[in-house]
Amino acid sequence: MSNIVQHVAKEIEIKFHLASLADYSRFAAHISARHRQLKAQHQTNTFFDTKGFDLEKKRIGLRLREIREGSDVRFVCTMKVPIQGVSTMAGGVQRHHEIEFDATNETAATMLAMPSAVPSILIGGAPAEARELAAQVFGSVDEDTMECTGSFTNYRRTFLWHDMALELDETTFPGNHVAYEIEVETTDPDTTMTLLQADLAASGAESQPSTASKLGRFRQYQREQ
Image (cartoon, rainbow, N blue to C red; front, side, top):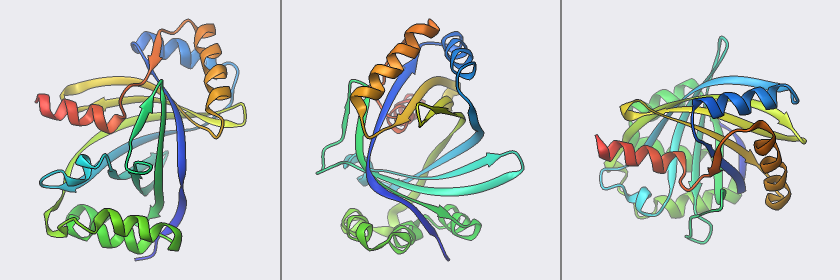
């Protein structure tokens, strides 16, 4: 199974939660009138963990994302790991290590049908600089207890915004809970935060810095069911 590694890095993301569908629509109208939309995707995010949620206890997220863009369908596997064991989400800024690679259709099918194979697939797909991190994550994990722990869907519009990709999400969680969020990956969080707050104010959309990741909200809604 061949995988193409796309991304191994420390990632910084700015995240803002929009209060309602009306606020999402206001911000979308404001941005689309001023910035070019690059793509629109329908995503299905499936997560993996052990029966005892050993990864969640370490604040690690592991997902397989199916991306549908027009007639094109592809898969991306992503693992997010806290930096120095500490997960940080403060003031709408999230920092973590990220290992991400394209997964072939064959690899994706194997992950979904046989979750116990996920650790070896991820370690095998990682380059040398990330292999040690991936091996550390799964070193104390019983592969036979790995399972799919649920999924949610997301409609994502991506805009070219100040030479960055601004992602505008409409996410549907279990129980038909819908959330609206803005995400921007950046190397300069202070400047990006200032620019984003200016656009939010100009759009008239009510918002607040995100206090939890999508995975965190997903787990919360799962427990409420």
